[in-house]
Image 1 (tube, rainbow, N blue to C red):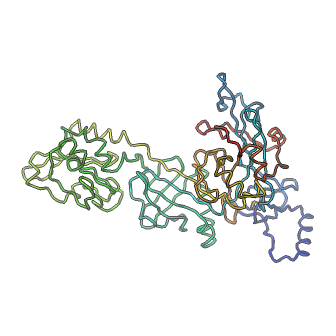
Image 2: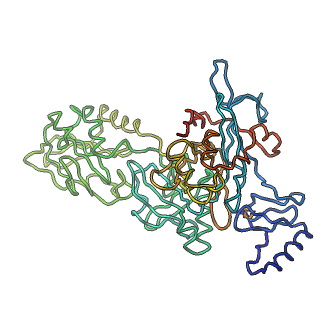
Image 3: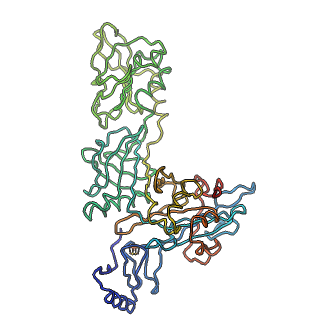
Length: 509
Ligand code: SF4
């Protein structure tokens, strides 16, 4: 975040003093930015505290490009993204155009109409897209880290530059999860905590890398769409499944080549001959009992402590999880495979005459299945999901009767997108949405020093719907009028995203 180059407005000004200050400011060529509650007084040719607005030639100007996405029609009549060098980035007539909220600007207070309310015709139907850059004090980032390595205890604080910016939350299948940002870290702690939390979210949402430390856990480097780095080591593989699932997937491929297979996993360690998959295949019980708590046959919890060793446990010697070998059931020469859920760790043993596992050279057939476990692991990535509430005063920039917008979104008559990317709107009250930042154009996000995150949001609906929900219809402008907006920048529509106007949006009842 940049250094402030503004003078805050003194809150103690009386109306007379405020008028004097305003007159003096005018004399000095200062402009007051009213796009957020900070109300920066910006000197000539300087920028405000967030660097989004500046005083250009004595006028307040939004400094970043206003992003419009376009796609065109190929020879088969299909809409496709622009490609090649024959497109100069200007608005193209007849192309599919979608106006994003990126760089659109913000209105404050919210009762002013949104900065751009744009009409367009789609297959002969009049549509309206209302765009703004929402200022979100209520927002956070969920980070999914594909790894079974232990990053830290659930609820452990996550720190950046020594400040708590979030915590470890419930792990998901094959992934560790972090919940970062949120209103409590933005507003409820020290000023530094709020600034660092905001900066962390901003960097992650703009697809940058952030180094963080989990209290009592790992040092992490996280970046959207990139492999996570855990304690300095880049993670490569997302596990194929838990230990039990790995047994289920590969049981038949081990049959005849191994007498027992133990898949080491921090959550659910699998033991082939006890497991339902082994029983189904009529495998002979091997009599090898692992440590931990038995959940169901062949599935064990807590065989070791969590860590960064085999299968997300703290072990480096797989034999350490064997509690006992039953001499009535096991036999000399028994072939035992121990493997992790990624195939990254694997060891082959044969029981000697005293039923002690002795390391041995792994047979080719077993090596092939271990390799297949690795082959079935997806690349480990970090995923950054921005989550925010657009169900508050932001709605007043869209309509005079905000609850009608909420109801319209709920009934799918109004489509919400963020930077043109699809969002998931949570059920229940409000307009609480989530968006995968990797589907959005680069640098879609900004901040204001209140602190809060600034994110693009678009509401698209039929013109009749917009009128019915009390929209600011007198502020609707045609799409073509954007040609007069100097800072419009067109980008090629990201082909992986659905076109925001497909499928067609329904009619108001
Ligand atoms: S922080 Fe940015 S948006 Fe807010 S008043 Fe200052 S320049 Fe304007």
